[in-house]
Image 1 (cartoon, rainbow, N blue to C red):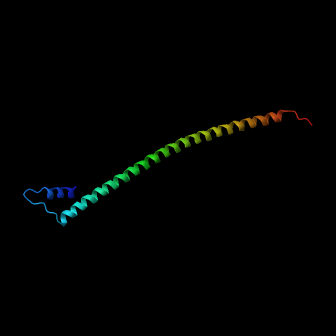
Image 2 (image 1 turned 90 degrees about the vertical axis):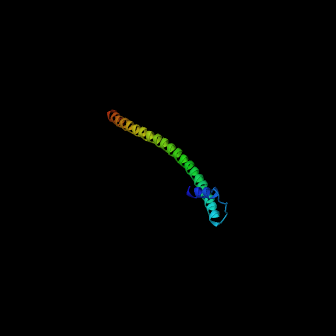
Image 3 (image 1 turned 60 degrees about the horizontal axis):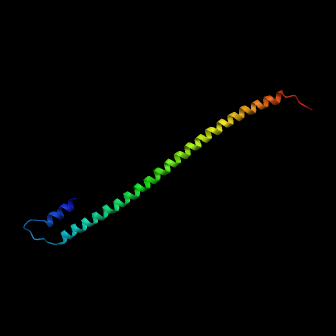
Length: 101
């Protein structure tokens, strides 16, 4: 901002001839450099925001997968408990059955 203001003031000085000297060329180069840096930073910001979006979508997918797998593990535990109960019941029935020799 400062270099832009100085350059504008230097170009539009009342009752003074426009003078193209090394300080003015230095200010013009600095303005061009700043514009280039702004453009570069803008591109990097766009790239970073795209990467953030990709990471957020990946996180959402991982969360959905985790919920699904947690539900599956819970269901498996319930099945194991039912099988244990059925197994105990089956063992009791086997004990009550008469043995044939």
